[in-house]
Image 1 (tube, rainbow, N blue to C red):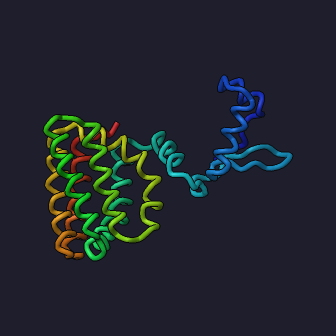
Image 2: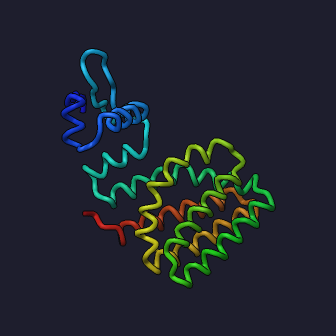
Image 3: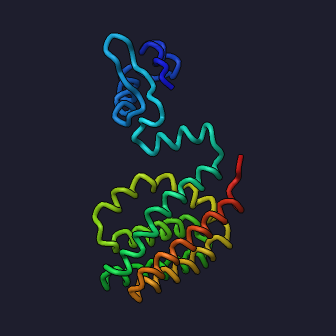
Length: 209
């Protein structure tokens, strides 16, 4: 970190891209806090602590950490956000929220029975998204949005295993029941238990290599 990038012409040639493409990439990475152009001196790589883009951070971590550790770090972030969101959803949900979550879980069960991994992952994400919406806090979905791409890859890997989908269904049903009952404490506890099981599934099924 802190090093200057090679000259534009040299870097474009080494990456086999046009200078126009390279400039656009530099602009994007500058917006994300990864790069820092200094007039008259060149473009420098910022310390990772200054990066503002989750995708870039994950790309960096993938070079230095194993997939299992990255997935577990993401579960820690999810726990911080989703446990609280579940409590709020129990207190603030609408009938429409409950109906949507029930339909999502029914479809998840159907997709699980058909061994459709892609569809079950989509349903998993949709269920958790609906809880964020049911929290009634308009900022939560925006805060959570950068995680979705990272979570998609990890969930696709774990959801390929039948046992993981069974675990998810069981935990989702408990979470939904607590939200339906308006029991914020039970909803938070259910989501926390779901995060515990998710972490256990990751250590069991995700490669550390």
